[in-house]
Image (cartoon, rainbow, N blue to C red; front, top):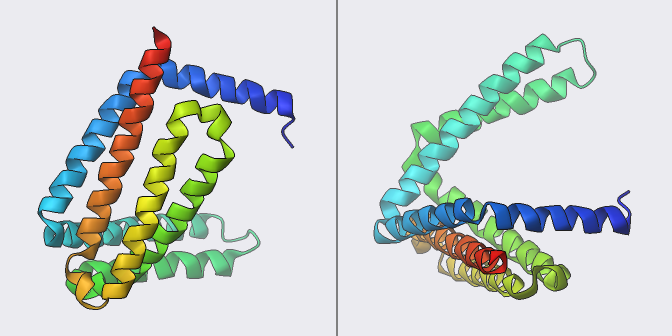
Length: 192
């Protein structure tokens, strides 16, 4: 358990790190915003790219999991690890073999994820509003936007699957980038 003093020291170190590396946060924010705009301009392409990217992630992590599970086959939980890794390989293979058909399912999953992320972001912003001073409002806005997008997509299914993943990813990247830009600029101002 972390004591209040340790937590305060950790917060101070985190603030100092953001101040020291505000340019890196600004660069990342700009990059995310540009990628978000690109996804908003071409949402079907962004949707397909997301499905393919997720397919490769599942496939590679599943293969890695199979290798590690084989090496550690004498440890407890071997069969559960084996099943988990095999499911990841299967999911990755399906996404790569049929990315267009997987877009509807991914749209539902992504809408649920954005709903959960929005709630978590709002709770984080509210819980840390004293420590984040003016920056907490950026997090609050980002969380509210995530929740609104989630409800719009769910209400428009199944036709929203054509554009939803690309638009959701684009908006999330854009607002995530704006949040980082806002935090970096606030940190820069506190440096001077």
